[in-house]
Structure formats: structure tokens, C-alpha cells
Length: 85
Image (cartoon, rainbow, N blue to C red; front, top):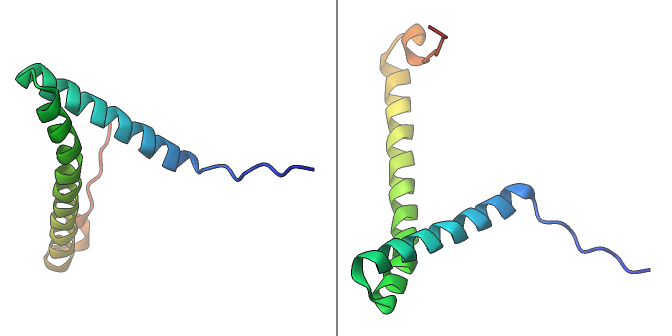
């Protein structure tokens, strides 16, 4: 009997499809602005890499801010609670 190949996790599939969509949008916008396919592809391939680095830096800054707030503020001031108006 043939075995089914293991399924990829849904979160991985969503990440891959989002990345593909991001690439298509980036190339489309770059092409609309430049009218040059080669430049559009270059921008479309470079932009996600730069965005990944920027996101990592952004997350690290927030992590440091959270640690700083927790070490300097009373516990009641460190958590944000959103309540309906």
C-alpha cells in the first residue's frame, strides 16, 4: 500500500503563499513605477529580504522596550488592557 506524504503545517503553507503574494505585488508595483521588467524583478526579489531584516530589528526593539518597561515600572503599569468603550 502506498503511504501518503506528510502534510505541511498550515502555518507554513500560509507563510509561503503570503510570500508569493508579497513578491507578486512588489514586482507589480515596481514595474508600474519603472516600466522595466528587469528592474521590477530586482526590486521584487530584494525588497522581501530587506523587509525581513527590518522586521527582525523592529521586533528586537519592541522586545527591549518591553524588558525595560518591566524592570522600571510597577507591575500594574506594564500590561496594556483594551476594554470596550
